[in-house]
Length: 282
Image 1: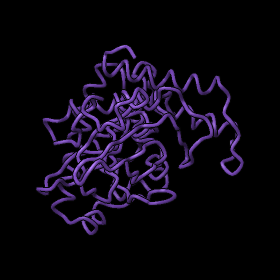
Image 2: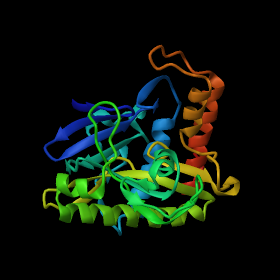
Image 3: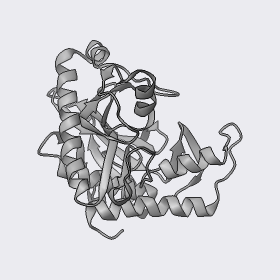
Image 4: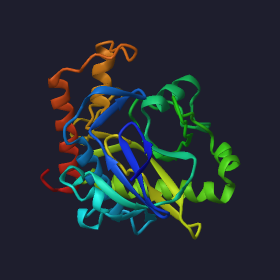
């Protein structure tokens, strides 16, 4: 089976002219670098969380999932190692924009706001504190870099790249999907501070949600019980791993293995997020 992409976490294979297999590995990346350790079961957790959200948001926008049942997979993928961590999906013409939505001011958005009161060219109210909820979610797209860091861009620049009509539609669906899911997550004790989506167009030119949805890799999940404005938050996502790497001055030019304890804690955070969101035991 032809492998057409090997990302930081996902392997993508071409099944035929209109279908792909996406396999989610246990690799973990931080600061755009794949770390030397794997996190056991991480791929399965991510895949199952995405599956849950794709199902939950299909009334808002179509998605690319054909099946997550191993019986429906091509023969090459009907093996135990692919169970739970793979999806048979529709091949799309992908839109070259990362669709980022922020409901809270944190991360690079907080850094930008402190410098000039804006995030991706959007003027925000004066006097916001770190991690504060925004008056309404904002759409802050970025370009998809083949290598290195993605670059934040304005909505106007998005219109130039993909056309005004498509940009408007992508913005509307990004905010709509985020808002519905953030509202649901809040009932489970999770604040979704921000996330990123990817969209494609099908053979009829219709907008389709693709890639992964609201996983701990593509989003910031905060425990609502410990949320406190004015500082950075504890999280269920890989922020824990990022923080550990920063504190220990980990060097990506000379990557050393990460202690088992850190891997175990990271794995537990992923599983806890899955169980809270879906209501299922992992």
